[in-house]
Length: 313
Image (cartoon, rainbow, N blue to C red; front, top):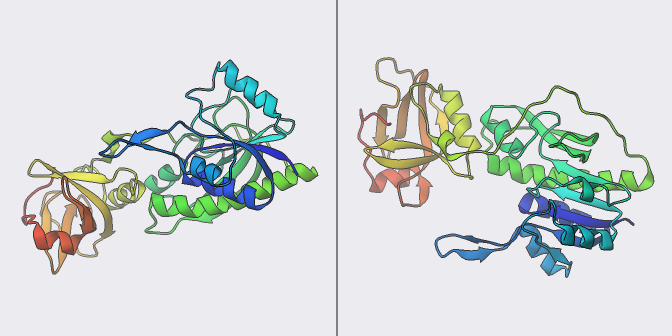
């Protein structure tokens, strides 16, 4: 069996690490991001990959940076891995590390490459309203997700699926594909295909994109924004100078013509919350008031009042 050095950070990566471990590959070390303070108490937070490594007594490395980090690079050389597996690690590997393992460095990416190279492929698939996506394994090079393709698997995106739900599904599909990839590399049957020169990017998300623009966004774009930002940051709107996050919606079948986009059309704990869009209306299903907890719209409206005919900002 190959000696594997694993590099990754979030739960998406943890599923791949666990799958390799359960397939009896020798994990000689894990590289993950340093612990970070998180939450109101700013308690130090460890990554899911680190937590799994601790539970299995796997050696852990947490460098702040890896480029020009001679001490870390020399440590990896001493480990002498046969292959390095990288899943959502969050840092681009320099050539000095790419050249270390005998079988190279393999990356699991959350899209069907060359579509959605970059940091947020799963999120952008939802934001753009795609109906299919998938996972791809590649041999890594010095570019961003530009290496030769090994294996890929396509999945359908469900109509109401959120980023969080798709993330969880793809983490399982990807973990299985990575194990299959390593097996094929080990027995010499792994394919290798250059990527097309035609590619798209999936850049990191930013808070500015999370505001719903009622005057320009059609109802399907609003729905995709809400789905795509759930559970990362949530889409939001403004009601009487207060921020309200919207976590789940459905498109209304009713027609409204005269009201301004963003107008509250219905608002009570029996019929729910309906808001006018430029091409129809949406029904809010899950909402979060400012400095409050996320809850169903019916629970929210039992304790909060959103006035009909008020226009959201």
